[in-house]
Image (cartoon, rainbow, N blue to C red; front, top):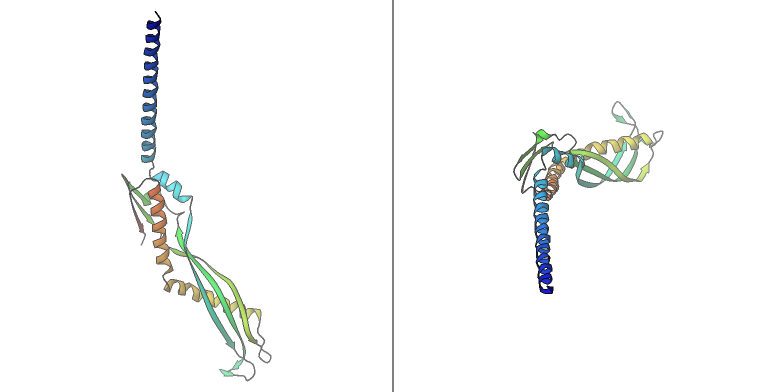
Length: 202
């Protein structure tokens, strides 16, 4: 009788063990398949939502140091009046940022075919120009023609206008677009896309 009971217990133990193993395998398979399905469900709308969380992507900063030499004198009929020349020298440090505006991105700009995604973005633009610091040297007032705060302001504003062109000449927009491709390419690769193509609107 004891042998029968022992065999019975062994039989149920084996059944219970097999059931636990089966449930474990089923749960693992279901979880893995569920993750794959979830990953494949990242459509254009979901991608758009994730990218728009970034909104403005400032990808390049350029720094400029320049010496500004300002000179001016009172004139009559293009004749410079003696002893009226005023001047100063500025040492200026400035920063220019460039980036991509992602807020204007729409689902139309996102094409998905399997694991390949193509984005069409607005071109890079200069997003900010900033004078970080400036110092005046050798400031000299002219006779009845002193250096004023307006002279300083006008000189710095003219510098900012030139700064914009200097940044463009140094390829700031091209660098911003290349960096955007790198950052977004890595980001989209992490969420499951094997091939990422990024174009810019004309």
